[in-house]
Image (cartoon, rainbow, N blue to C red; front, side, top):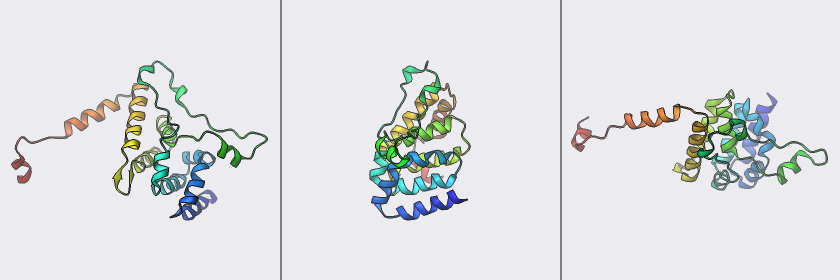
Length: 182
């Protein structure tokens, strides 16, 4: 219960304050692991990141998109290495100086690793694809590439099924008058 209150506080502190949003963004490795079991942590991330276009674009830094040609590699090579706490530095110092984790990779890994809050992970990935109701094509394309590569690496037939359903679900009439009459 305390974690939920803390995430609500973080969301309030960052609202309409880009300095605080950037500071919290740099500390994401500290609480990204909470996203596995606390939906409010995901809500907090969504609130902070989606209100700041700079942070939305920073999500593309350090992204790792597996090559489709490397399909023979075992899936465990795609997992994220979490930052471990060294004995001489504080956790905040490590978060500031270490290579930041990529949230797109993190949430895609969570989806493919049977984590409990899949709907929330999809909601996060969906929310970072737009800023003020305008699409962010860079984020959209990278999420698609991640999905496509992970689906093919995992021999996931759902990728093909989604494309087929999309193609089969769209009916383009030969005559535009048919559209007006329906």
